[in-house]
Each structure stands twice: as structure tokens, then as C-alpha cells.
Length: 332
Ligand code: 11C
Image 1 (cartoon, rainbow, N blue to C red):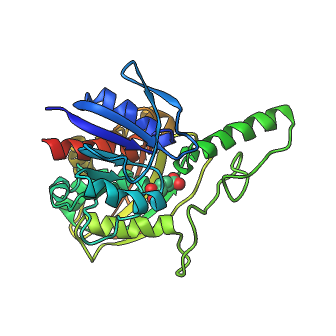
Image 2 (image 1 turned 135 degrees about the horizontal axis):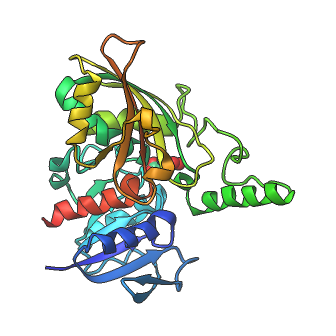
Image 3 (image 1 turned 120 degrees about the vertical axis):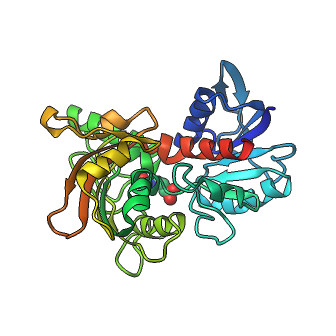
């Protein structure tokens, strides 16, 4: 059986990656519809060697659509996802619009695949930084029960979209030719800098991005007990987010046991051989779907503490691949 699939936000960084992943994974598509704002309507895009014209997203765009993959920002999701559901489609939404709604499952297929089927027409894709952390956390949690997570992220420019990626490249070019460096997409110059500010600040001093890691982790691991303290930082990297993660567990988890668990975990590539200079880095993780995990060690600040480093391609596993995997769960 093949399905009618709509990609909403098709011309964006994640939208384009949706097309790559649908094609790579040979998702059974009967008709494909590419949707975007009026600004991008009329653009031509290729899928599996065939040319498609991008259509303007309207409330009537979803007739006969079975699955709609949304990545066009939270306000467009809020406005248009209900129309897609009304027309009979299941929406997999990459924005933050519905993630914390009680009747919307938030799913990483390696973590809580069973939740995907309990949907009312909308399934939310988590924030990319949360996905990349949770893929390795899940097997560790199942074994040792995580009580606390302290995480610092190293997030690439493309997490903020195609224009932000371009800005880092333009800043690099301007610096090398002695031109003035322009700043638009980020709060400060990203080139030769790191910016501890992703999304807006909230009342408790954490940013929204950091609170997503707290709330989404608890929702997907079905735990009100786990505490997550995140510091999210933008770094001058083009693709793939990295995270330094410290977990405190109820049961003792040795580095050896963690390596054993992670070497058998789906979605994880154990890459932990510091003597050979082998540890996760964004350049290694880019362009593929596994979350690279390494630098695994017993933490010396906590009794039952374990530290590790993870890198994952946030446009792929952190967004498009995860959403297509959810769609695969639906058609299984
Ligand atoms: C970033 N993680 O790197 C963000 C992008 O809630 O889906 C994804 C924001 C979200 O800027």
C-alpha cells in the first residue's frame, strides 16, 4: 500500500531533509504534495528525479492526504494542523505547538514508540536537542533509573534554520575578506563565538529551549521525578548538535555496563576510544542518523553519576528522520 503525503514547509531546512529521508527510506508514497507559504509557492523541487511545484499552504490543502509532515513553525502548525486532521490526515508536527498537550503523543521511536498509536490525529516530534539526548538516555534509564540530568548543549547554526546557516557562512566569508560582519539571525556574532541563548528567556532564568529539554524528557520517559537542568549554547558549527550529559541514577551504572547497553541500543553508535582520539564530534555525526556516544566515564562529582558526550545530526535524527520513523510506525 502507498500513501498520499504532504510536506508542509517543504522549502525550509527540515522540509528539504524530509524529502531526502522519505526517499532514502523508500517511504511508500502514492502522491506527494509540497506546501509552503505564498512566498515560496511556485518554486520547483525534485523528489526521486521528478519535479514538483510547491503549492501555497491553505486550509484546503489536505484533501485525500493520509500523512502530513509539518515543519513550518509553531504558529503555522497551530493554524493549519487542525485542518489537516479534519480532512482525515494524521499530522506529524515538528514544531513546539502541541508537544506538551495531554492528548498529543510526543514520540522518539527508540524511546516510546507505543505512544504514537495513542493519537487523535496529531503526533509531535520533540525538539532536536531532546531527541539526541534521549536516544542514549533511554537504555540507561531502563537499566538504572535516571534521577537527574545535567546537560550543556553545543548546538549548530542550522538548528536555527536555513537563513541562520547562511549567516554563519557569510560571516566566515566576510571575516576572510575583511568585510563588515553582519548579525541578523542570532543575538550576537556567531563566528569565533559561542552564544548561551537559544529561544527566549523564561521567568525562571532558563530559556525555552532549556525548558523543552526538562518537560519533553519527563513526558517521553513518563516520569514526573526526573529533573533536567540544561544550558543550551549555540556554537559556530554548521550541522549536528552535541551535548555533554551527566546523569545521576538510582542504581549504580558503571561505564562498562553503560557501554554494553549503548552498544546494543537502537539509534546509537558507540564511539568511545579516547586513546585513539575517537569520540563524538559534529563533523562525524552529520549526514547520517545515529547518535554518536562517547567520553563515557564515572562522574567524580556524584555518587551514582555517569558522564558522556553525544553528537547527532539535528536536521536528520533530530527532526526529519524522527518524523518519518513516526510515520513508519503509523503505517506498520
Ligand atoms: C535550535 N533546537 O537548535 C532548536 C531548533 O523547538 O523545534 C528546534 C526548535 C524546536 O535552535
